Image (tube, rainbow, N blue to C red; front, side, top):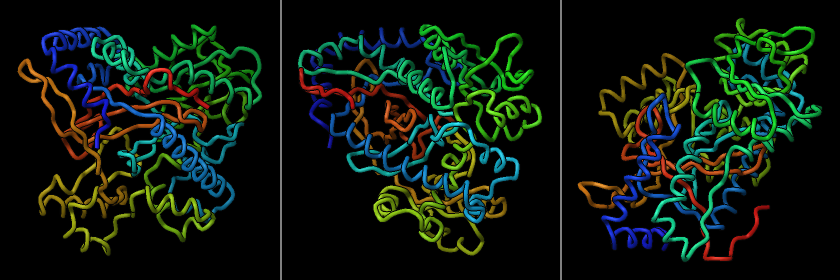
Length: 443
């Protein structure tokens, strides 16, 4: 059921359709002039925010607290128990990187938890490695905050959104202090050129520099470790915000040897650590949903997993027969790709294609089967033929987590069964609302 504010939103724009079509044109013009881009193209969006109440925010904080407790326990088990490591099947190179102590406790200081949410929730996946989309979320929210329709709603409601750049810097500096860093660090935002979100990096750089931090965007292959310090040219780095994903580093490990050596010797604070691979790799859900593999978790954590994490298991020849005849209830997911790459939904395939996909996945050993559980859809406002209409679209929600704390939202919708940048992903601004003068301060 949609909250009352959605109906009020629709009533406002239907009452004066020409006014709000003109407002949509203005929003579109601002978006076209912004840096909210994916692979160089302006992101798809609709003239429709997602609205959340304080009870939703309390739920998101609970989700972050519970899953981070589980992640921390599993990371500690991985570090101390060689038998537990075997469940993940990581390469020797990746395992060695994970075992390096980063100099601070949080195993995934920057993350986005993607969930299906409608009061109740199920996890879709965990992004703890190269987490992105802060820029497109905040750009949409900034532009929509100035829109005519939000101005009308503000007559009745306080409406706000989560700022994602300066709040990130605040947590980044806390990690730097925990690492032992002093003074005002110079920061490197590091990713392989051509692979990262360059517009987003520029937004982070601008925020860091506004607070007095010298900042450089660079390729990790250009880093030099000399005299116990890490450099790019003559730029000495105190703090690395690493956006280069683990898999890409592993593929280029020799080219990144200076960064890796500085990381090993704690000559530089690197956020995030390679330990994020444990929760980021989709094998993590298979490990969690097997009670035999995670008997160190308590009953509350086990109940949380049972209720909210979809059953996930590896594809083997001996479990194909049941899945072949039950394709509509399953997804095939690659263990270590991102942005929806390689995800195959049984609902989207005929029997022959599904069988072929399953057999290829079983032969490759690179895929997992996961219960399909996108149960959320909402009535979303769309503009068509100079009118506003309503469509039922599927939804997914990202929870940004900075240093273990819930810090912001990323809403997406789509008509397809998989909502992701590589397939179909329409972004919406995310606002928190309350009747006027009733906001409680964040704790």
